[in-house]
Amino acid sequence: MDTIAEKKQGTAEMEDFMPIMGTDYVEIYTSNARQAAYFYQSAFGFHPVAHCGLETGTRDRESYVVQQDKIRLVLTSPLKSGTEIGKHIDTHGDGVRVIALWVDDAAYAYKTAIDRGAESYMEPMVERDEHGKVVRSGIKIYGDTVHIFVERKDYKGVFLPGYESWDSGMEIKPIGLKYVDHMVGNVELGRMNYWVKFYEDVLGFRQMLSFDDKDISTKYTALMSKVMSNGNGRIKFPINEPAKGAKKSQVEEYLDFYEGPGVQHVAVATDNIIETISELQSRGVQFLSIPDTYYDELEERVGKIDEQTDTLRKLGILVDRDDEGYLLQIFSKPIQPRPTMFFEIIQRKGATSFGKGNFKALFEAIECEQELRGTL
Image (tube, rainbow, N blue to C red; front, top):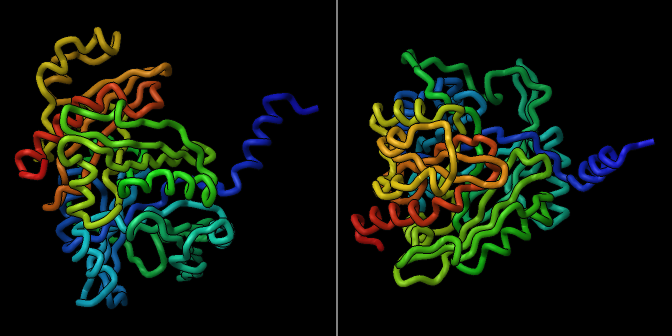
């Protein structure tokens, strides 16, 4: 006889009609993929993995694949004018085009998503080389962003057919990044609930958390956010929309400069945020400046923590606690000329939340940057 726990587990598995095993890769369209690859290797400690371009028979684009632990980035630039890639960069600047999801059956994932209301981006396509085959398919999501389903159980190659192994010759020192913790999407006012329902209906996600303008606001600006998670909890997509405020919010600034909805930031996890951030700062990666007063009563707010407050103060690392434990987090400045995409570095010590207690300090720091840019 099945136990109650086994029955609950079976029910959860039945309800998860869209099994997703993890993030396969994140593809960033950028004006100079070769220079971007150098940046991610030298600054963020990513290892070179694979390359495609003219030398590999690809005529319209050049891509470099870099990886650190389970985080795989694909950096892509066009090789001629008038391409989809070039038009994307012209409109949005550098930004995330593809959030690829690792699945066991890309044809099933595609058919299920289309049957449940998704718009097609790419019908199931089998790609082969001497290392086996990969099946990929895709659907459109907010703005010009897409999900590609990747089935690679019959493939032993370095990345995908059409790519060759690539060694940049650089001496790479990783900085302890482990996996993609979550990815945040910014959408227009009034569209957050539309995309929440999309992820629920089309991909079987559930809503984990919800924040309104009372939770996420300062004297000047506000936004609203809902966090969506897939069946096994490995994929988390917070979705933000602006809320009415006295001045222009960070989401409105993003939408203005990205010229539409898109990925606001990629949060990557580490097991030692102090070592990771110390190394990133020594390599010139810039982070938001947190007011010194934030740390004056830190332990009174969050309780006992393992880290020294003076060390966190020096590095600008934020701390928050929930019922499960605490987390440490920090946010980079935008990594391209437009004030759009940035990175979050996060270390979880039991906490499963997203730093609600840090929202005010974080948003005030962002507003300082907006004021310097003249966009607040």
